[in-house]
Amino acid sequence: MRTVDFEKGDYSTPMGGMVISGIVNNNKEATFSIGIDYQSNFRVGSISEGNEFPEIKEECKERTCDY
Image 1 (cartoon, rainbow, N blue to C red):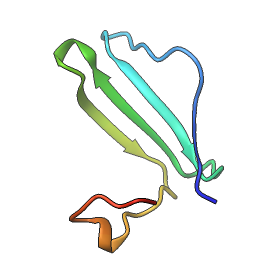
Image 2 (cartoon, one colour):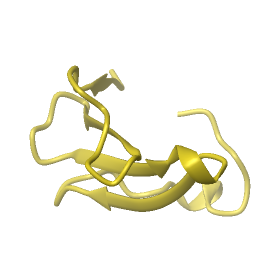
Image 3 (spheres, rainbow, N blue to C red):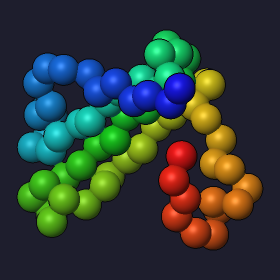
Image 4 (cartoon, helix red, strand yellow):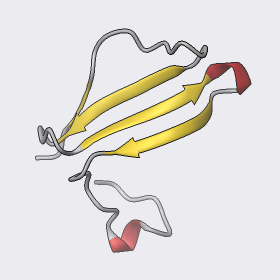
């Protein structure tokens, strides 16, 4: 089973942006965090991944795939 659980709470940041965070496949080491600046057309400012975040499948590196 493949799941993504988003953390609930305050998504705002002190600099006026927002952060979306979560856990993949119920693995506390497979986390992610995406910083978004909504004052500049929702530009992604940062992306971080936990130690066990899943790798991109080889066949999906050059095209969008369903997981």
